[in-house]
Image (cartoon, rainbow, N blue to C red):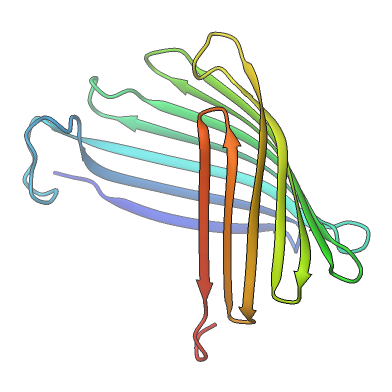
Length: 206
């Protein structure tokens, strides 16, 4: 027998302020990419195991003075495998985010702080903290220039946390109310990071 689950839900605990996201999934996954593979999930073999992942995330969000928005969130997820060859993982994350725009909408800004801890059933835990801000200046009604700065600390490559600076630039182009394009590049502790986002809504979709 095999189990399968894919579910997600959001509870509005306090109207327009406090929420709870919950999700869960059960899938059949290969233990090793180099072991025997099956076409589909129905032909099970010794290289396949059942893996379950569950997540819950309470958060609050609202509006402060003016047009400043805030969100405070805690998330915890756990992944468990029936095979002793696969490590179980528990992830905890805290997030505080602020975002605002000037009265004439010439300047938009965001500030975000994230703290994460990942624990493994085999091996040491990893910790990562990040504090990052971005500033978008309107060069024209459809074009915005983005500056990114911040700091991060983690113990990915050492036993103690090592701190690194974050810097970056980007551009946002909004040729119409239904089309948005954003590109950014950041200097991170691992090298350069790139992101590219394109959104388009057709005339008859929401």
